[in-house]
Length: 345
Image (cartoon, rainbow, N blue to C red; front, side, top):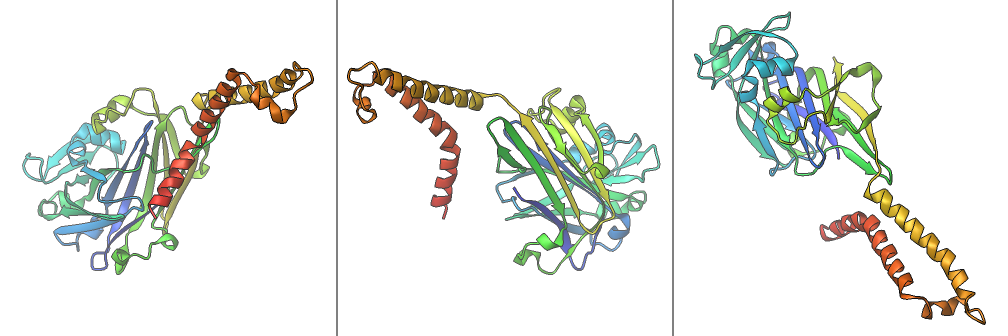
């Protein structure tokens, strides 16, 4: 699955992204991806009240579900956890109604952050556009000195956004994520006359079942590997697919680049139905190969190999049927994939 993302606005509203967050969730049979944008205060001064920013996603389509995470991040405890910093105070842009935005004041040196709700998602093939209302932000004395932040998730219509390679005894998961890498920019009419946003820092959080091992990563950009904080994430995301003691979080970060790329490989060693099926197949084939020569010698004179089939017992044909079914089991995914390609042409 291709994961070359592009963040852009129209040329009249150039925008600088202070921090761009990508959080890719891998569950057992499905996935979820979060995108978070921290937009620089300096960029916001010249932007209109109705601000739009677009994200190009190769696998995105109009059937993908999207959800604004403002409601979650307006809660100080969730933001403390997401931004990894203590919050000393939360101010509302609308006198406590919690509809137009909140300002989180952090204990440390981090600049105050204004969390804004997304007013509208506009979905096109491969592009999602996010609309924000900056009026309350600009009218609030404290807010207009802060960067703004908004975050949302997307549920892909495909099971996984990673590249997956399944072997007999091992599954390999490959994440090859690129951001604003212009050599990969699509020649799409919707991408003409746009301004690619400058991004100061990009974070990639890969959350994957902990039965996978991280076998390749860029050492200099790896920030941490840890177990998933189950209670905090469960409260924040409220997703039943999150299980206790089942996920691993890998955090990577890069700074001050024109474009960003992250590459990592996870592998899972497994012994399952595929391995047992292969063992059964090999055992049956070897058994038949050993049986037929000795069975031929029980006849006087010895039966030629070309005539032995008329004299084989029923059990041998049952064994051949098992071999056939086992071969179908191994080749069925490839057959289905081939048929889809034929009928989709």
